[in-house]
Image (cartoon, rainbow, N blue to C red):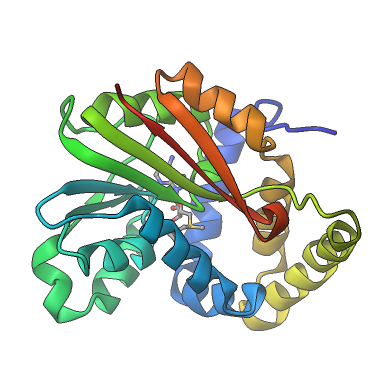
Length: 239
Ligand code: SAM
């Protein structure tokens, strides 16, 4: 098995990710619903319940894209900095933001690997379906640690490995055959969705990713599979 984000040429990966999200930005939310059968909404709800954002907290929602996680957290009264490397994704998010949440949201283009924020600025750092797209994942994890306050917490929601044997075969067939076809017919972009499936399959399994989070300096790192590991929530503390 290849977990290959290090095997791919870094510049090539950054370029591909940039063009994929630029192309899919306007259809991104519709495609999420179609591909996950609406499940991504439940996963995001579960994720934010685990983050437990509180009023007045400052949270960096990294790779925040069109704002799904940020809106949920802003609803709880937290101040959210939504950051993403892709201005097109952020622009879609700003357009969609409910007006009552606007005072709780800031939008800023940032590369997760080299953040412009100072040390210890945030109470929480979230990244949902974003980290697997980052070229230098250890660098992004070190930056997450740096910008968190002492006692701050890191949360990551990401696709992982389905661990239920029979379901894994169904899931494989679905992701390899059906997802690119949905991409082709709905977003007119089969290549982009082939990339997404490939990036999910290359991402390290839960224990290996936990070890990477620990290597970046986080303590009490844990992971929680959802739906047999189709997605997983990883978390850790800056202590
Ligand atoms: N968090 C949102 C959600 O859950 O709907 C968006 C997830 S979207 C699948 C992945 C996002 O990661 C894209 O918006 C992409 O631009 C962003 N991204 C990729 N590489 C990045 C990087 N190095 N730094 C910041 N954002 C990045």
